[in-house]
Image (cartoon, rainbow, N blue to C red):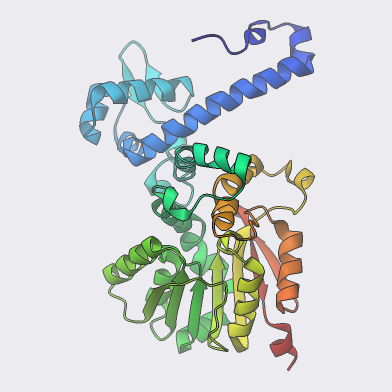
Length: 371
């Protein structure tokens, strides 16, 4: 394997101030980071991080045995983790250790701070690179069914970004909604995916009635399985194109968690949501925190990551339906303009201290609010 950047071997003052050399270092870092993301995903999916967090410093044999895995693969994975300074090693003893302050961001016990969950998007998106390449050349998009494991990964993502914060941080953003949920209201979740958020609400508020719509039958099957496992009777899921809800003034609360930007016709979806709210109804929308202007996202902590997911999934699945291809990084400015055009009045935009990835929009229909 050839050396990708010989310039990096020259550590002179001139090298450190040369923009070209600095850029080359950035690109080498990008290669390493991409590779580490693959290994983080494997560490999560195999349970190796969870296993190592419970073990004392151990040999590769002992780690593989405890995790029920093949030692040779575990040993090579450990090499990547040591090279990335994620796992510590005692070379004299040949024992490996996952430091506690690393385990705090890499294990299932660390939820909602488990970054390894998000690393799964890198290999997932890599599976459709050839499809996306074809789209670059010929237009169109990649349909949902081409994304293996997408709903499983999104379910884990939702568990961390939405479900874990739902009752303490997210629902209280809607004025008076907890009391109404306790009394009993009708709730719709648009783009419900595997239904984790809706199941959590249905468990907490047994007097209320919950409905979830999602375009994907695979996601709806997973949602029904989650509701069944929880023994819920106050919940309904349906595979449905939400471009035109057509349900009248039926709901007191409508939620959309990380879902509007994926839609075929997001403006139509927002208009349908506004029409489906009752007189005192609220719309709670969680979507990606970003700007509608590329240059303003340069300082976003994971801006490049989010644009990559948008290019290789969110935008593409919409285009595959002949849709608008809005994309995950539609941004606050465009979101507010679209909410206004859909008939929502004053919209409050919230950020949560623990979540730099999302904005939370709380809105009511302007017409109903003023009547």
